[in-house]
Image 1 (cartoon, rainbow, N blue to C red):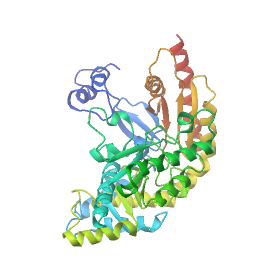
Image 2 (image 1 turned 45 degrees about the horizontal axis):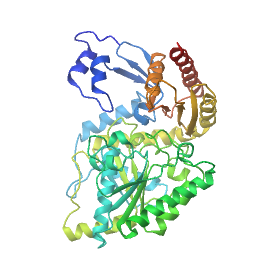
Image 3 (image 1 turned 90 degrees about the vertical axis):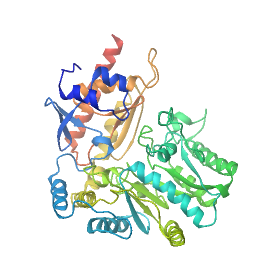
Length: 451
């Protein structure tokens, strides 16, 4: 990309540090500046049109440019642009959203607690777990188990829960007391000759062995995404969650379901907790809760978690946690309207209706000479590229992504996997357009690297 002096791209390079970006490469190559969005499409500042097949960051469920959300924000901004939920203060939108979330929760939950991002939600879940253990007179029960390749955020605590090396390297993470068990990616982590059922049994045994090694009296919680997102869209094998939950129950370990990506319809149910028959004690939510039109996240906690927290807050005199914009009235109003749109337009039904086509088109790409595996469920998936001589691990994905963007398709390279997570309003014709562009990009990239 040629960056013109004084252009918006040049100013971006000059003044902004970007997340998940090689800063030196940005200085050299510049950024893609998105100017506006409409439905499943976004347009850059030069007017080029793209299918946004990642829904931004796994999150714009109702698509771009939804006027109902704009109007909901404007109404609330005019009425009460800000208030907090500290010191027994509240406001209508946060109360209504808390009520809605508890009523629609996939398993019985007691209270909703608001934060601003998935990272903050998982960070808060970790603090709640520690607080609860102290309330129960079990100060030694503080360790938390996550999984290799799991993604739970980027705050100091949530990045420690994340099981991806680049979220730890040079940040001096993870924190002590956080452990990572086997990733449920069968193709990558299976042993020679191991069946899926045997692999599932080993995953559960690895978790149990880790709990026993650390001491069940010291292990407080386990956190997991029902389907791993930023680890490469990893769908666990059949029976995995049943086996894992048996271990957690056996050793009195709380289960935190990270539904930040999966929640609000992505897997074909309103929550992936339903898709996989989970029984979590805490559910963390963000992204599609507001289609990311406003920053908001939530934790849903059951009575088993809430009652000790309430007791300890009475003992201390306060639950000493909170952030300024948590449960922000504008964000809560937008989230309520967003959920109403998902329900009224049956977008979860649209996911179910289109999932077979999405999956079949994705699976067909697996036969491409560059591909090694297609993975997905509902309207979330990824295609992984084969290792290739002359290319380091993780080098092929970004190069293919550049070809896709040139053709007008926005995906996300997760190492050598290209992820797809389109807005849930996508049509059958648009699904075909996504995969037509994907296939054309693969063919063009194959010619490029063979030249």
